[in-house]
Image (cartoon, rainbow, N blue to C red; front, side, top):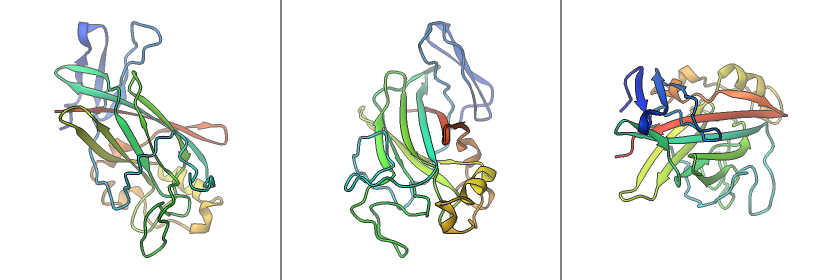
Length: 234
């Protein structure tokens, strides 16, 4: 359930607050230097899709296949999740949650699956998970994803807790079409040809994708993106 527009969530003791405005995060400044104030943006869940494999592969750099060490080519992407828990008027970092990430390579291929286009069983590139720290933060080093027929450019993620009862949240991240067009015109992406599906043509994106857009900033030869998400855990 999405929190109403401009609802203000007060931290315990009233030392800080954040405002939720149409899905955009407005983090406050913490009174304690060095402590990350969570943004607490409630996002929609989306379908897991057919390519999730619970590899239990704990690593931050997911570009390589651990079976042979080969690194997938593509534009580097530093992906950071800032995970918070929202409830009872509180917004606080969610520590100890497992965040899984998986997506296709520059040519639209997923690892460890078999379909009509490829068989990558046993390979584990572009898959992995990390556990949120005390600030609710995890970081991955991956690649800007490619595309495949029927979908716009996206990254899958899943957040799970070990609390009793356990909790699971699954959704997807999306990218600016203009940036995807520019990067996909370069190798190795260009070998896949011109993509045929844009964000507004993707039926899954149309069910809340605007709130799941990943804003990127240039970093070295690639990009860096921070995704703030608040979970309403029962």
